[in-house]
Length: 193
Length: 226
Ligand SMILES: [Zn+2]
Image (cartoon, rainbow over all chains, first blue to last red; front, side):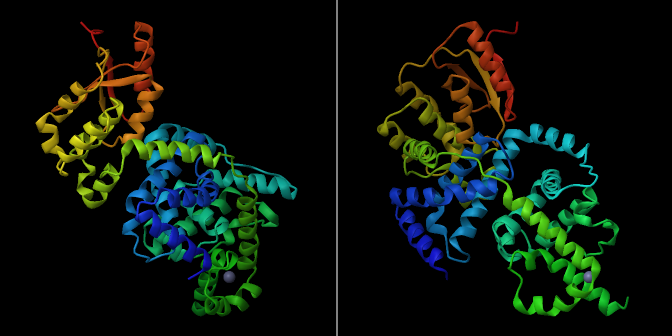
């Protein structure tokens, strides 16, 4: 168990004992981290705060049900993921769909990019991925979570994480065929496990 | 390509993201190391995924004052007290995500919306042993709303989706400058009234705000239709 997790478990134990100051501390320690992850799924500030506050509302309610099967951070991020899904689905289903279809209808095209531009295009390509695929990439690449941890966070089988990662990679390669000197995306022959 | 090398290629290709983020087990990495070095496709994919990681890493994070956000959550926790809350009930009875769950949440909302004091809330919690339907049938809502400050005149009738949550309804009503006049004791229809401005124009604006929300099934000014 890492030092961070020991610290988090102690805070969570106090939260379970209805210590509001411990909840505040946990909130302040996690807010930025959750914001980093969630802001990659939605750019709407109200949605972000709503999702983060819903997360800690739930933490306050369920702290005594944490059994230590995972790291506290995995548990909290998992709650945040579910709260964000709910918030997004009820707030901006229509808006998100419109945005996604408008971006998807105009996939990025590029000639001979310099590196910065190439990353810009990639960023746009990422935005066209379905939410679950994007979240999988973000959790893996930004937060460095393992396949098993992502399965715990997203509350799905490990094979689903693998499938989402696979689909995201194929989609990015197809959207951005000429990136990084990679001339031919058809070489990708990964397996769908 | 032989079957064995195809299978090694697939294994290596699948492992690439987890090698990049450092979470792949050491033994797995060693098993595909030579292949990654020799296979041009996997080499290119490794390079490509590193760029994906770079694109993800360089994206900025918006500023959202954590202390201000915490204050809002803290106020929400104060308002909800430490009694059993909707999310808790959900957790114990997942089946209640359906319609039966709705009045329970709404009752909690009502307790807040009509600004009942601790006494009213305590009374409500005691009469709510977890059975939302029983509470709905007793008409506890009306008793409680009658005990509150004088209700404004109802100007709007609305029906909300059963998935609507406490926080969402709260935000919606605050944004539309409305308050609850009566909650449904049997049907689905809520009566809402103005929080301050009771002009017809304000009512129309509030109706528009309600209709624009995905979880509002129906919103109509009272007396608008013949
Ligand atoms: Zn290969």
